[in-house]
Every structure is written in C-alpha cells, then in structure tokens.
Image 1 (cartoon, rainbow, N blue to C red):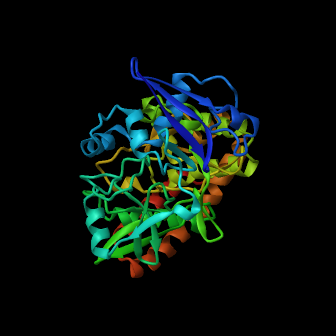
Image 2: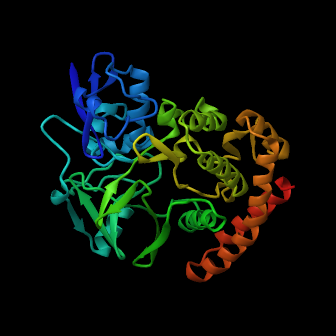
Image 3: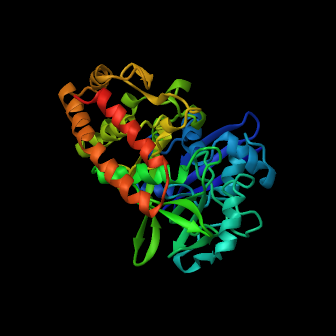
Length: 414
C-alpha cells in the first residue's frame, strides 16, 4: 500500500513524503513546480534540490527527527491509536506545527492562511490541568479539537503561545511561539536549573533562546521562546531550522555519540560544508565549552541546530535545553559528545581540548584561549545570577550549580 503526505516549507508546497507500507519504506521527492522556483531553498542540507526521489535512509533521517522519541510515542500512541513505530502515522497526525517551518498535510488539506489562524486562551486552571497531565498525555491536549504538536524531545512540554501570563493554545496548524515545561519529577528544581543555565549562557555572551519562569497557582514552569519563530507585522512566522541529526541523516534514536550518533567533529565539519560563517562555527565551539563547564551531560546532536534566516543560509541556532545534569547523581557522568577522546566527567582535561582542536582542524591556541576566556567570565556571572534569582525564584539548586562550575573551571582553566 502506498500513502503520501504533502510537505510544506513556510507555507509553500515543496514536495511529497511517500511511504510504502510493505517493507515500511520511505522516500521524498521535490515537487516539479517548486524546483522551477525554489523560493525557500532546500528542505534540508541532507536533501539538496534535485528531481530524483531520495532514498529511505536520507528521507527517514530528516522526517523521523520531527517527531518525539519512541518513549514518548509509546504514550502518545494510546491516544492516537498508533504503534510507536508508525512514523508515517504520527507525521500524518501531528505534523502541522513541527520544529522550524516544516508542516505536513494529507491530500485535500492545506495550511491555514494568516486570516485563518485560530487559538484558544486558557484560564490558569485549564493551563495547569493540561500541564500537570502531560506525563499521561505528552504533547497532546486530549479532547482539544485542532491541537496537535509533533515536537522532538523526551521531556514533558506544552507548545503554546503566551499572552502576558495567559497560556493560549494554537489550533489547526496555527504557529506556536513558546515551549512550556513543568517540573521534571524526581529531579530537584528542574525548572530553576534550566532557567539558571539558559540565562547564564546569555550572561556570558552566548546566543541563547529567551526564557522565563511562569508561575501558575504558585507552581513554577519553565518557558522558552521559540527561536524558530519571528514576528512579521505583529504575527508569528515560522523560521526554517534543522538539528544535526537531520543534517547528518541520523536516526533520532541514535542521537548520542555512544549509540553511534553524531560526534562534535562531525557537527563542526558539517557547519563548514554548509558554508556557515566563521562566527557560527565558533558559536558551536563555545556551546561545547559552555556545556562542559556547567556539567551538562545531555548536550547531544538534537540539542544543537542551525536556523535559516534566508533560504540556504544557515546560522548556528540559539542555545536551548541547557541543564546542569551533574547536580543529579543518578544521571550519566559522561558527556553526550566526546571532548577529544574523552567522555567521562573525571577524564576530560585540557589535553582533551587539545585533541578536540586537532579533530576540528583548528589551532589548539584558539580552543584553549576560548576555554580560558569563558572560564574567566562564567564564575562571577554565575555567582551574580545565583544571588539575583535566589530572591526572585528561590531555590537551593543555584548554589549547587555554581559549585560544580567552580570545580570544572578549577580543573580545566589555564
């Protein structure tokens, strides 16, 4: 049996995703009319503009990465009556507001026009009820007609808009603008942890997604503005983006280097092959350094992305999903991507960064210089934020993160 979905990029039909149920095989082909005038550029660096259909590996590598991981799809499948392995079924059900500017629609259905945008404002009680039920109904407001989201990532989240402090559900493919995360069970003050690390990245000069804490009936929630959205004439518009699993055609279940996923040198090489500006290549290097210094073991290939401000012109995306995992002893003590030849927290040293420089084909002076510069700025910046946030959003987690940063800096800085 053959089935297909129309693939849109920023509201423009670019091609067709096809699925052969016998053999569970996928292919993607650009629409001939789009190839004549490809105003938004290619769908992916891994899917360059050409008339021939792309094979299953490259097709699956891009589209499967639009969906949440298997563990989340298992829970979603109960509501949608889909097997967790039915990637095409999930794309058909959830693909109208993907990460970036990609949207998927069945035959006979098209994206809404600006005039057709629809959404519903929630009361605080309604918003809190949905957020508290996400573990049972991940990424899906069950019973809310028209609300679907295909977002990647394993943590519970609600994709929405904010009007002041009011949560607004976008419906029928209307673009969302914010990601709202409740506290992660069993992990102390996860909301304050991510808020602190995200703000710390900005405080030391890195480009990080804007964030805040939203308190509903006394319960804090982490809120991040979507960097893949921009306002045009007061209305949100999608920006095209893709993560490094998509860029490198890697199955999303292999996002960690230890599972055979992308390595830091492979990501850096991809930026060069994409002809990203030197500043964007350095931004990726700085992101690696920052995640090491804050003790973030979960900075895998899907937590780094590029965004296309102009068709075919990639820039390194603002940082997101920044968390100090080292404060939780039950979590891994190995970085998601090796630093040189080392992954374990206790094994990474200055020599590891020299090895990384060699693998990146850049000078050791450049890498060690940027490491030392960041190390010099991060400790006082973290101390200042801990004092400020301790008053605004009290938590003991800030002091623990600052202690880990000091320990990392003492070991790694020159």
